[in-house]
Length: 220
Image (cartoon, rainbow, N blue to C red; front, side, top):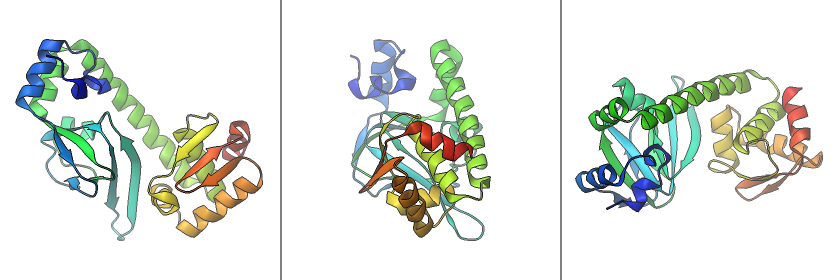
């Protein structure tokens, strides 16, 4: 029987019903409330974290004690695939930010599926490629000295450069942690962008009104 939760996860959509059913029987999902740590940074990444529903955040601390936040993940999704494939430790501490349904799959199972299911292997390769590109864009974003450029770049990338609502990761403070700015600086940049008619600020979110105008700010 096809497991509806597992089947919605993009990585597993092409698996046949028999294989999905076998995975679901051997590795059951569990309900997890908000505020639970699923994995700590540095812990051995021996299991794949499959978030079938809900949202999780990732963060780690720099050598100077500063907190760095990574993009929030909303299920259905799989988190930290690169760490699991690399056989090392988790690169961040993953915490549920809403009630979630989570399934843990052994790393050996992921490697077996990659070896035997070409469509799944292609999905993983595309994901890793996009992750590298995202990391490079994040480095470029952080290297900019202008807060408005960093904020505009993040908003456009997260909103896929389209008009519409974009949720902030942990409000303005969380966005600051993600792009290396203080909450006050993020607030000031958002106020300036809003005053220019490029976006509207809402509680916990922004609404992109003028994508091309934001792109002009980003591109300086």
